[in-house]
Length: 263
Image (cartoon, rainbow, N blue to C red; front, side):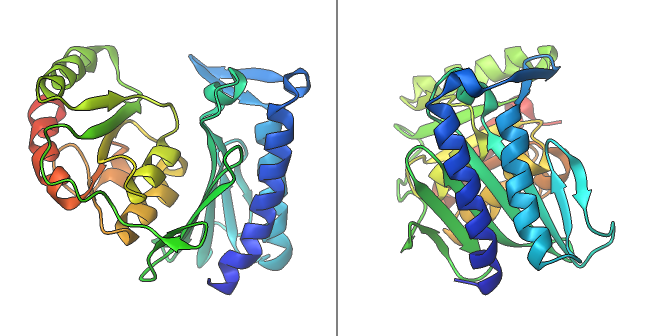
């Protein structure tokens, strides 16, 4: 494991412990609403602080960007940038649904280099470094080997505007007629980790933020998967519309999404 990842992983594990303890004590959770169906808790903020401080102590010249705190510390044009989502799936966390994660990505000169995703409840650590494979608790992962879209297990979610909902419904109906099993678990980062681990055959999400998908995107890439936006381009990290899947499922899924949801 890369030394830089090892250092940040310690802070991430401390944050995971804090989150897991709070999950068992819902009376300790204080909830605020950021926007429509968009929540933040004191636990999100505490976890983000734990991770950010662990990075800044060792790497004071690195930029840190967090979902809850915006630019937390570091120069605006730093060589290294850490992108933190302390709890991806906050609604699940609030509702006592044990499906959420910590997501941390590192970019070196705008290129994704390292990824850490931790499921605090299942104690699963998904880690990747560019060119060095994707791992789950130390074991290499690969994307699904399913060859046909028929019967695939596929996740969706994100933030669909009202005008896109009919097209999304049509797409889901088309996939279900092909006996695909559709999931909407509620944590984009963890769903990406599941694609990287071969648990999901693919996924598509709309209007994601960078912290939702940066770490998971590298995991999928290092596990042999493909990523793109709804038009089949590689602009997903910029426009937030993301498809991720094994190569064969991506080849079948991408045209259907482009037909229904592309621009």
